[in-house]
Length: 478
Image 1 (cartoon, rainbow, N blue to C red):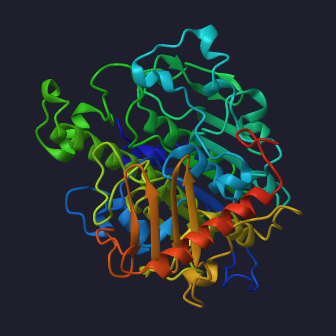
Image 2 (cartoon, helix red, strand yellow):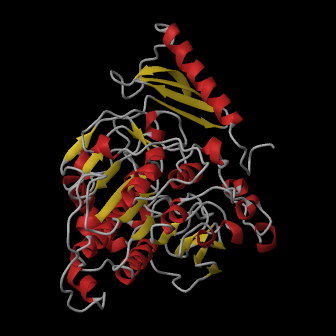
């Protein structure tokens, strides 16, 4: 069950908290008497573009993310680098295109799609177990160490399961969560394979407990423990991703039965595989996650840390499994806007104006440079980053310098150049003017052949740049 707020605060065991931190933070680069800001990076899994109350969706309940929006800025043209989880998360933590950092496909066993249960010996040598991000890549927590940050991750890792790939070897100080792409919310198994770890050690200590509660619990513990020093708390939920089970039909998103009924009305488990039931479970999983986020935000208030904490929320890719991507076309795994444009909210009191909406072209590639700048940390030497510090864009001091972005997933390709978007994929192709056609319905390929040629040329130039980059594994041939 979710915590009640008074029980939540009582359960922290903090006693009476006296004076908070002194001083104030001005605009980026200005004088400050405070330590570097805390960083709270929250990622939802497969959440739809329109699945937030603050977007005007009357069907879903997200009061805490709505509050975060009211106290910060909501980005309406924010993109991830891949339409599914692994490469998207790799870019988030490195600030580099998947094709540059080497993680441009999934570390996933495909035979589960055909209901194959991997025995332990076979799983141990399967791609899902042995694949991982190149160990030469430098992630956010390693950069922040030089500024005295302590870093923790609680939730989905998805960048490799062998010892050398795990979070503690990539700069994190604490880890509790699962290491592959998806789990059952209660058993914490991926298609029958136990997947949770504490640090480097597999664990089944919390089997049977709803995963969202576990990741909330660990984030609360971490922040409480490290409240007197700068911290980076990475909180990547599994919600509202579908549960990874072999049963047919697949169960989709999971949520406690009483919670579904409390927030979304009548629900009959006997009819759980109808679209209506799946949608209710999806909404309940989002709302439960929203409540967990609210508990973490309340903790920051209680500890008087909120004023000096940069909070970032986004979805890892477009929505699926009952998601609402309105008004975008497509969803997860597709190169249309519904697979790549995601909800994103930032709150940084006294730096980012409250209640703003930013309609600038921005991306997850900007997250690492922005965090580095906020923390006063130097980006890694000799590493090419594909984004920029977007703080002055979010404060309204300048327009976004991003004019282009490119995507490739196997044979599927896409590019955005200014407001024009080109897609070439198995699910559909065309040239679209996003300024007039956000739903990508009107193919302009025949009407604007010169624009199409220009966008394709920019894509090919990007491909050459990626090919010329210092090679990274595991997919690239070098």
